[in-house]
Image: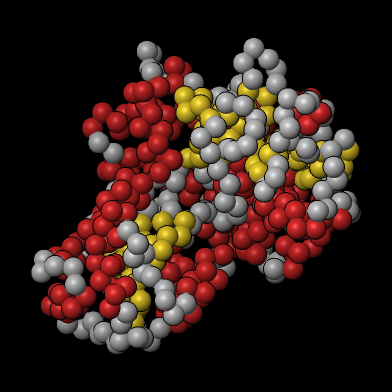
Length: 453
């Protein structure tokens, strides 16, 4: 049996079980990020009895709401379909998987919460497509948890590191203490492997077991095929073609110097209003991350952006890599040479790390000017520009934003590079592999007022 990859959701599930007032839980996320595996493992380790119902593989269970949504009616109907299923009060976990195929079951969550006899977890991929229905059916009676593919910390766990690696790396950032040559070499090499592979559990597991990239591309290609199949299955009519066009154009547009996504390049005479729903569909499905252009670099971030100007990144870098042409694939896997995709891949990776850490994505490009900034995050008092550099060159826009009186919310900036830790002119420089720690670093710095002003 393949080894289980430890995930951050494991701790979340353990804490959820301990909560005496817990609500039914919906774990959402794109396909193949490991939702079912983590839920089943948690269930079998923590409950005497687990009832697992896959609503795609066993469509007969869609009849369980025939008599209504009350707990007793549902239990009675489950037992009618399969009399061998046992219901032990206070010792049973009920799992409804592939919720997107039967969002009506969410109506029952209110009754499961009020009854309190059984713990319930729902899970599904591509929830964006039916999520409004699920939301309206269960508002106030459920808890949501969004699951992603492995972040770099989880990848390090898969490689055999324990949780102390988090504290060691964070301490380097807090102390502004450069990594030694060995640390830089090992962590940078692992991060590049992670960039090429992405964080999909099936891909990572293959790499861990074989110790090479052998087989990883075919798994990634299969994931792409699965996503395209989902688009055909869950998207309506005309939108299918448009969604597919957007999906296929992302790598090409990211490789350009100007990474702003241009709808006009997707199809002749294409207009934003015709494609807006398609882009939101891919975002809701967890396949892409949208990075919106701010109207002006100031707080607040919410509401301060132009929805017609945006960059699109893949939610998992492995999907981006697997869609590159064959020559680029070979060069990347054999020689670790990123070629023309270098800037695109690292920018995608930092965007992915920020999103997995809980940030929404924003950038800024000033009209009729060279002033452009890759990302922005915030703490309580500051707007913080984040730069991604393929090489440790000058960050002219970053320096302008920090030094100019026009941007009072900006006092310092963060730069991610292939090099080591450093600080100069109110810019904190960190290696790419530290990006997953940015939120923790800023929280610590904020608490201790440790940022140099």
